[in-house]
Length: 120
Image 1: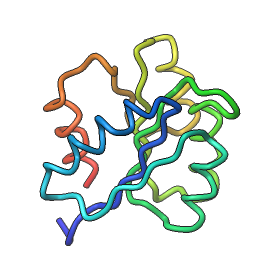
Image 2: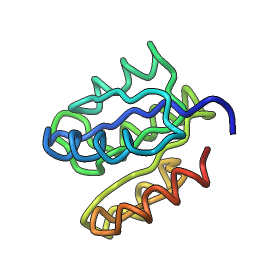
Image 3: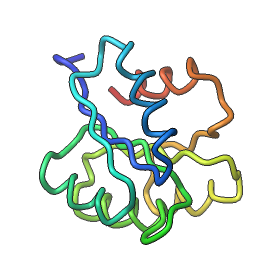
């Protein structure tokens, strides 16, 4: 693994972004964490900073995570996208949009870190 992965957390809920940031800040393999509150902001941030991994909420106002994933993967295919949702209904759409992994928000923090480790 190189010096550390750069992560972009995309979720319309500030509490979720803060919780994920707190979790990832404890993991030594992360070198930087950014946050975006919606899909449009996320696309702009990917263009500016080229993160290694995006943790993307599936359901957001403005531009949902599935559409944002489709745009990100078309422009920056090397960026890994993990779509997060409480709703399994989004799994097929997220994966067909190019998401590398779909993770339930109900899964354990250790499970998410295992996914991050596999992508790093």
